[in-house]
Length: 105
Image (cartoon, rainbow, N blue to C red; front, side):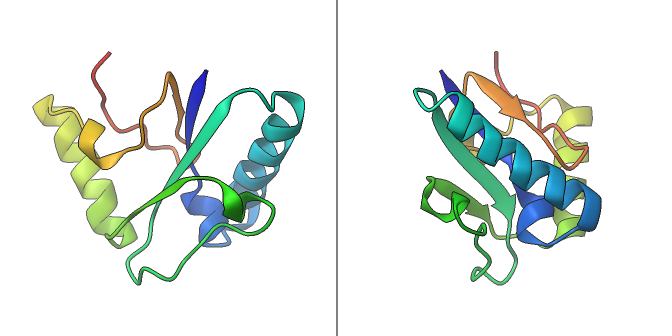
C-alpha cells in the first residue's frame, strides 16, 4: 500500500500537529514497514526537510508559502479540480494540517 502524508506541520515545527504528524509517521514506518511512504509539505524556501528519521523518505516539497497553499487547496476543492499532479501518488492520503487536497479516486 502506498501512503502519502502531509508533513507540513512537522517540517515547520508546529507544536501539537507537528509532533503528531512526525510521531504518527515514525510509528507507521515501524509497525508497517512493507508499505511505501511518500511525504509532501509546503516549503516556500526550498531548504525545509523532515527531521530524522523521516528525512530518508521520498518527499515532495510544494514551493508555496502557507497561505497560498491553503488558498490553492480551497480553490481546487470549490472548483472540483483535483490536485494529483501536486501530490505524491498514494492509495491513502493523510492530511495532518486539516487540509485534504482534492484528488481523483
